[in-house]
Image (cartoon, rainbow, N blue to C red; front, side):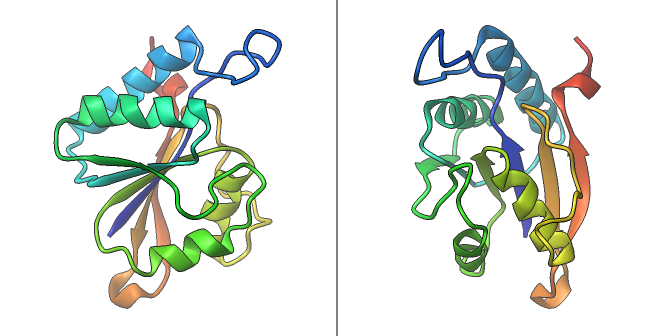
Length: 157
């Protein structure tokens, strides 16, 4: 199984809109990331987001670009910025298909760190807005490895 952990795209400020939807730059960056993922042919079946508007918009852009057959859903376990990693990790044990999680800092960083190293306080990946990591489950469900990480800045303009 592969797990894609994504940080939402750049949002507008709370002063501009208290719901903090994606900015035009955020929409463009996520569309470029989604196009990159579509070319690499990931077998993502589910895209789960935190429920915040910027994460939901990010998930929908990924789903639309990756093509039909993806289920987009709001998380039943905590994917909010300050949520603990434990509930997500517990939920993972019941998943058997490639899944993308769309969430926020600091949760995305802590989640990758805990899955890869066992210590969520370690800095494994710097999650800029719109960045995506791919984790692969080791054989026999014995942990996770970081396969790759990429952000919109690496894709050019």
